[in-house]
Length: 319
Image (cartoon, rainbow, N blue to C red):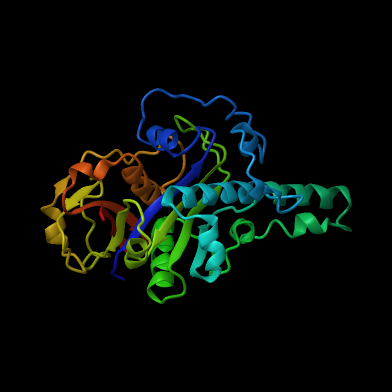
């Protein structure tokens, strides 16, 4: 599937702090370093650790930790993109939410299991029951921000970033909405990572290019999937971290053309223990947040993404 969409805003929170500190740590793989409070962070304690008191968190007496983090990350993505709450209130069906889940709301699910065991399987709190579905983070974030457009949660592993990008592009291209807030809200710990992160949420604001220009959006970056010719038959230098490709790119891109492309020194390691399924989109966010594209006058930074059918590329370019 071809076509570009515009990334205009990023909202991110983790024990490391906001997007600047998170993306900085994502690109540093030297000495191990644990963030204060991260190792013993209780489930749902991230907003308390960061001192976040958003009134949006008052929509319910109980919120799953992933839902709390998604609400805050979406609010920050809106602010970063220059979208005021009034704009959503005036056009609630023009905005959608698309999140990815691997394990989903594990903290609430564990509470439910503990309660069932304690009550010998005879009774379960309706509050817990209504908060451990996989779509709870997206649904609660939509409720908190008054968004009434498409509301979806997808699951996947190796190609999770591409699944999000493809579905977001589908929603935008078919006119289901003009803006999609998409990303991750997770509670995962990889103790072998240099900087293990217990809880984190990252949400991107993706828009149709004409919509972003019409509302006078600040600078964004273009995201596109670059499909490879016969991807299942040829693996394009899998050890290469990133490529520089000129515009316009033929679709599908011949593997021979990729073999001749210039490689870039862009660290695609995983010192935070996030997992490969998240890294392509996170690296695209890092490229935007760190203004890595300032030296890229034209063309794409292309990030390899493994999938069931071989390898595709996630292209990031100046808008």
